[in-house]
Image (tube, rainbow, N blue to C red; front, side, top):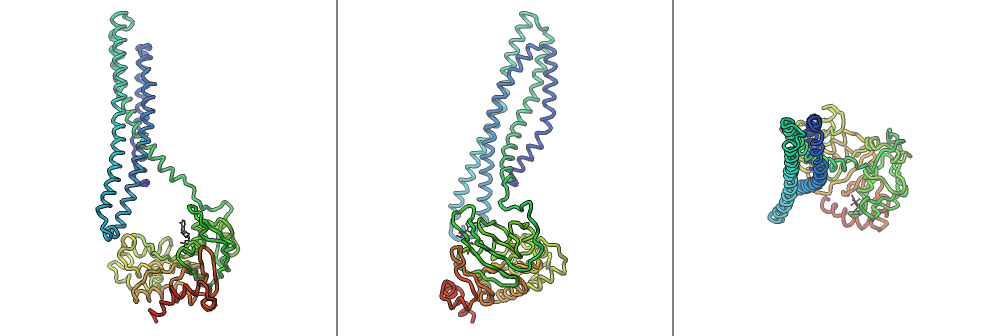
Length: 464
Ligand code: ADP
């Protein structure tokens, strides 16, 4: 809503006000000069109206701005509510909550209607009031002028007639300026909302003395890392120490909320840490440019993010590549076969969030994307949702290809992953409570052993 409605309002204000703001004052100045030449005393009386009208316009302008902000805010609310309703439509239907949602949306829409009504009412009021003030002034002038002509003869009747005609002519430009004022106030209000967002300083910035990471040779090191989310008081990560060496596969396991996602988000600097340091090959990542770190990292998340674009553009997202490289990546990700069966192969549009593909197919597109990027460091959040056995095999073998010869940090949900990991970090409440490999950890009889029995060992029974 902000990006569309408010920006449009600023655009309209700029487009409609510029011309009258230049032209109308010219008219006013010209007419006033003529009035002064005809009779300066009467002119002085007639411009007495200026401070009165200005005061009125200032008051009304402020009120219009406030009302516009309320309308635009409510428009934003309604837009986000609408998006939420459309994307959650399955849940609404499943919980048979259509009627309640309709009522709620009706209420929001009615609120918008009332706010808009008030805004329009005020706007419509501003013109007649200015006009009334003008007409009152004209009547007073007619009276004073009439007395001067008829009783004292200080101004000739023809001059007085000219005076009155020009005085009425000055009226149109003033009216136009008052109309323009409404547009200006709307534009200023919408603009203030837009700039509030544009002026936000990003929390994570490249320092002026930061340098680029040119490659990855040795290790990623966490030294006493503590991290608290901005909107929370809880330490999501507490005094975390670990080293991930080049070529290692490190599996993160732990109950939900333990901090696994947070740990992997810290490496590409999606958040900056509060205490301690994270370094790559000895360089503190806060001294490295974000883009250079992210160039070394490939991310395959649990939820596959695809854009409403072609298969080709989804695989080569953010990279420069040629068709043979894209096809090669798709083949290695076991995706080429199903892509070839799509209507327009690599040129097929995927629909919103890749709506036209199955879960396993989406994952393989995401894996192809990571393979094409060929990063030194791979961050993998294994999908928890079960796929059918056929897709599962295809996805797993694609992941195996992707992990080969790379440093991998994986949030593990599969037994095969933890069994083959070089190192397992067991997390709980933001801390690493145990680390080691499968053999040592299961013998230790701690949290890992418990998790393994609950979460992973069942897999062996299901899929012997
Ligand atoms: P895991 O991946 O192990 O399930 P997370 O890293 O997602 O755990 O979460 C660790 C902790 O940080 C949790 O207590 C969670 O509530 C909190 N947390 C996660 N993301 C945010 C966020 N964006 N803002 C505030 N707290 C968060």
